[in-house]
Structures are given as C-alpha cells and as structure tokens.
Image (cartoon, rainbow, N blue to C red; front, side):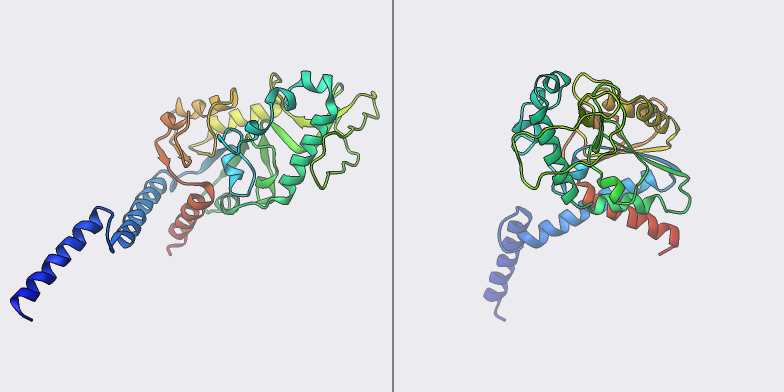
Length: 297
C-alpha cells in the first residue's frame, strides 16, 4: 500500500475512534454497549458485596415492584393511579360514608386488573433468595395491595396498606368470607354486600387516607427491620408515612441498605448503595450471582 493510502487509512481510523468516543459515527452503538455493560457489572458487584454475607434479609417494596407486571404506580406523572382519580374520592373513609358504590366498583376493578397481572422476574428472584444456603430469615414487607409477592413464591408477605383480595365489615371489622364478583370491565357503581353480623356494609380491607396501619402488620415490619442484617428497598418513593420511616430502624443500627430503583427516592440518602435499575432486571442478576457463589459455579 502506498504511503498516501496508509496515511489516509490511518486518518480515517483516528477520526472513527474519536467519533465513536464522542457518541457519533459508526462505532457509537458498540462503544455504548460496552460502556453500559461495564456499568451494569460494576453495579452488580457493589450489590453483591453488600448482600453476600446477609443472613437475615428484610425486603421493603412499593409500587415500582409491581410496575413491570403491568400495574400502575401511584405517583407517576402520566400513568400514576392518583393522576387518574382524586385520592380523597376513592381512598378516604369520608368518601365511603357519603357514597360507597363508586369506591366499591373501583376497587373491584383494580382487583380484577391485579388478578390478571403475573409476577415478574423480580418477584420470583426474591423467592429464590429465601432458599439460598446460609439465609436464616427473609421477610417481605410491602406497601402494595396486590398479591404478586404471594403468587411469586412469598406466601408469608406482610401488607402494610391492606390487600385488594380481602374484605371486612366497615363497622365491626369482621372478615367477609362471602362471594365477591369482580367486574369484567370498568363500571361506575356497584353495591357492596352487608355484614351478616351487624348489617353494615362490607368494604375493601385497604388502609385509606387518615386510617391507622394494621397493628399486627406494623409490629411485624418493625421487628423485621430491627432484626435484619440487610435491608433491600425496591420501587418505593419513600414519601408515604409512617411506612417510609421503617428503614430508619435499620439505618440507625448501621445495617447496610441496598436500594433498587430507576430513580432517586426520599430513602436514597439512607442507602449504602442505590442501584439504578428495575426489580425485574436487577434482582434476577443479583440472586443468580449469589447462587453461583454458594454453589461455586
């Protein structure tokens, strides 16, 4: 090859490399893929360093945990549950007292949507984690009102804010064991059944604004935070109190906290590491790495 061709080829290669590093030109995709993979590996290794010796693990999950199963979060600017309805109209005891039929219809439709959703890879990964050798206790405390953790393999899940698939009397609190027919499409109004004991209306067993959290579930969540040697926070904004205060119990003891969230939350400052990823992406990778270390693979 002539010196002029060699020089031209060298100049082209130099410009190609420069443009690739700047994110332009034919090398952009490959360079970005390598950079992304390197960042993912670094994040995985940091999470692995925090979790590999944990024996008592407390998971604290929010709506982001269920997002990849197709269920809306609460505070997303466009798709959030509270962007579509007035919280005071659909989540307060005063609204229920005024007109229960729209609320009954709305919650039954939400239950129908939750029942149609499937647990995602993150839910299944937590169920794999609890079976790891050396893990003495793994507890899930969730702010979610769906049953995806249970169907994903964690039958003993603590629900701080209630459960779409449980119902009780508004007044005497007796659990409702009768039939509930979930609508096949959204409807404006449905009539709730009445309690066979006192004759008052049956309501969803959901914690509405202004109501106290269930005492047994709260005490269990507190105990989990006090006993844990690792806390994993997933998919919560950290703004709903008093639930958002629970990780403070672990933080005050110096317990490492791992957060898995696509965006910064109000709880991020408490965390030793905040992994910018979703539950369905990060958890399977992390649990696979933990399994590999246990088996020596």
